[in-house]
Image (cartoon, rainbow, N blue to C red):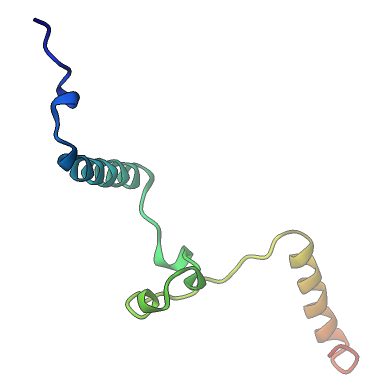
Length: 87
């Protein structure tokens, strides 16, 4: 008689444990291969308020690119040249 595939012999009570262990293992492997997130790169508004208390993070300076960056740079030059005119 032919043997039954081993996954078919696993009790349904083990499905949750097997799924959790597989998800954690794959997640750890992918995190190890891609590198961990730096706390400075995570927007604290995306975290639960209870978690924010436990994470120390220093906000990084944003580099403005494109039109927004140029507009802010123009405004700072205007402030230097015409301090009374630009508010």
